[in-house]
Image (cartoon, rainbow, N blue to C red):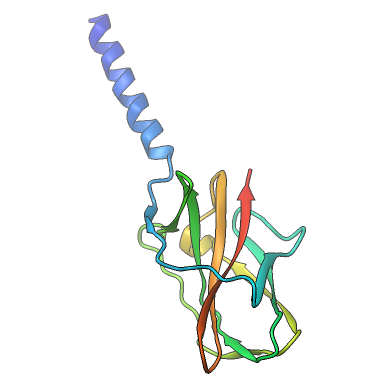
Length: 146
């Protein structure tokens, strides 16, 4: 009888611990990040488990455009993977096109709790795309949740 109880408790603990891990790690990212033309960073003092303010800076002599959309990625086994949204959640963005002029810096708040929930301990990055008439770039800001 003790063995059965111990087995049931062990199985319950395994199920409980498995449920607590981040099982929303998706495929490896297909995006090549280029932060030499447009830089992106998390503004100091704004990072929480559910949001952050990012600063994007245009280091080029050309104007770029960007929009509201972004996605989150998580570092797993030394590779970046797309972080999947929580079940039954979506993120909706308005679709304006903003201009990022030569030498200009802009701040944007990213609130991801509705789609991703509060992030667990780990290394993440916010990824956005920017473009001009010649190219589309993916830029990212890395951060760590402790």
